[in-house]
Image (cartoon, rainbow, N blue to C red; front, top):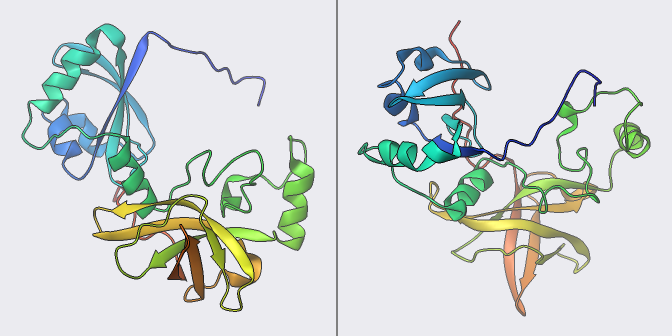
Length: 235
């Protein structure tokens, strides 16, 4: 980390996420400046007399905002936002469904100490220099390619593919595994991501998922399942 960067734990702050196409319509009622706020930017504002730090970001693939607020105001702010007809409370299960449809990684599933960003198809985030931890392995994969890569996995029917389920090619050879799987509420069908051998990453390749002594035909598919709908300035 550069010497001019510092990280501090702010245990006195809570974080709320307001996500979805109606998020800006709700927040603009408190501060119209937020309508032109660029994606991934940060701003200070006041909502119902509560000081907030807002970023136009989230982990759902949708336009939305993450709101940092003092712990002692978090409940009041939550109740205020929920007073709008457009706002409903959701849990991590809904967030997980949305981030899967958007093809977004979750640490402990698509990323870990054993999975590199190259394997996760996140090479665009990594500098090509060599002065960081893990650079030797990363730079090797840049040059030679990785043995496995993250892909989308589509299934026929309504069977939800579970984390850890093994994938096999049509000759019965092990091809990879499922890293995350759930029901995609927006698409109204199961969605999953997994890791497969580098020679099996082309969209359309047929595989077999073995789960609980049953076998399900699956297909490698391009990510994301659902196009990202982040706010993009027209300027």
